[in-house]
Length: 288
View 1: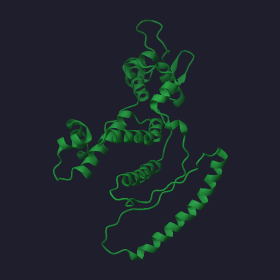
View 2 (view 1 turned 60 degrees about the vertical axis):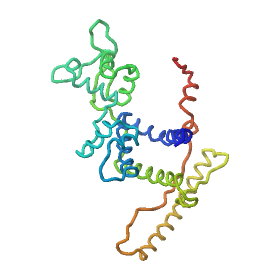
View 3 (view 1 turned 45 degrees about the horizontal axis):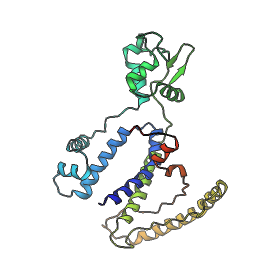
View 4 (view 1 turned 90 degrees about the vertical axis):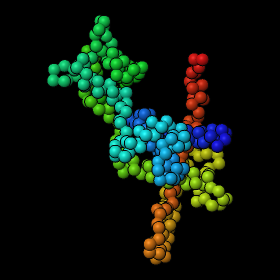
């Protein structure tokens, strides 16, 4: 694959991931957890589509995916044992865990000590020393703000107190999360098939209509109401068509799930700004 094509794919991947990564961060999924999931998908896809022989060749999978042979082995071993990737706790979770489990930061009966923000004397424990020990280079003030906002820590006259061991994120139902994966798979699988097709016109239906000059919030609201009604009517028509085809199915034929997905999208222009442009806009200078 040419370097230019790779670069375009990388940019497309970056754009596709932005709303997903925003959701992952909001739900406390760390980069390490995302990375482990990506490794598993790389290995599975390499085996399923590019390594069709019966015997699993870990070296070839490593070459195809760019992973080390050890990483490939770890992914395969973990899945053969039916396990899940070891959880990589977020920094707020590590700080709270230390506050609740480290004997230096707990009092009688394992109750977390109330801590001043900063040490007034050498060797005195404080929230700053806790963060330094359990979160490395994370700025203590930013960490404190996150914990206060989550309700895991409260402020007292003499300092701060941990009141909840968990760093709670907004809850999402399993059904919504499952739907997110299914919708993403269906959209991306069709888009990828149509881009990678060998014969012109051989792909699946993939069309788009959009406002040439953009729309105000008022018009977007009107369009939302319009498409909910018209789109629902069309989907019901498609559902009737599917029902009419049941009688044509032949016994024993292979069957595949298929359907039509319609979505009203509203783009956020900020999401299309590159990381470099974002850093430039905030006045960040290179250290080199």
